[in-house]
Length: 332
Image 1 (cartoon, rainbow, N blue to C red):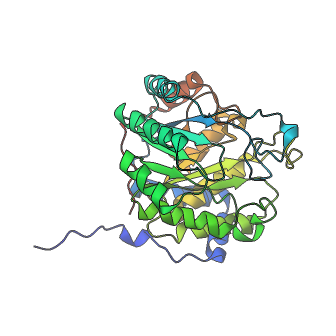
Image 2 (cartoon, helix red, strand yellow; image 1 turned 45 degrees about the horizontal axis):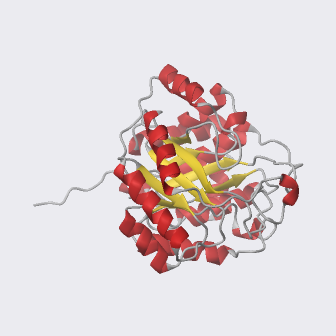
């Protein structure tokens, strides 16, 4: 019997150069969006936009010095108080409320450099098991992971692990000094080896150049398989952080990043993430047309405001877009 051949397999590449990605990114906007939209429809249902809810389960006091992050202990002027890990039952109540509101992935973030084995990590495992028991996808972001910790999260049923690269390798040291790029890549490898889906993207608007943005996408696109989820964030310039004076990101920059990410990673969930609150309905629709097929759903991200659930529900309804049942995004 002849084995079926995927007619679109040639769209999946892991050998992109930065120059190629930069050339795509810089296409005339209408041409770029059209090309991305065609590829998006070849590999995905354009009416399937995933809703993910995000909760900070342990806020503030992070020892990392990420210039964009108000949770860093280095940026006391941001005024984010250090809080302890939330109780398991409280987190699961939040997850149940998110599911009732229409979310089907529940993401949990803890402001750690790396979790320590012990009662708190055990509590996170219980949260993962509880969220999965609700019939939802479960994602966590806890900082760096050892292979053993990744394995335990996999055993608990974790769907996906978020660990962003933030930017390209050459600009990275301008933003963070407490963790190397290679350490980030090692955590991604540990997650992938454990059989957990990878959620990895970056931030636009930190002062990086377009080549830095292309370089970040190149690192992601040359992973095999591609990340299942790729968050595209616009910087939220929080007072008290080193990037507080950065200008707002042009919405077309986000459209270009969504479209370029879709072209180089055709089957990933491209998530329109932080900064979406600053976009008009029309700008969000243009991002969807360009290949974004996931959003954070709920009025708050980790420590910054997000679009209201009612507004999002109304927008999706106006577009005639259904919300898919919880299914892990397909890797190639």
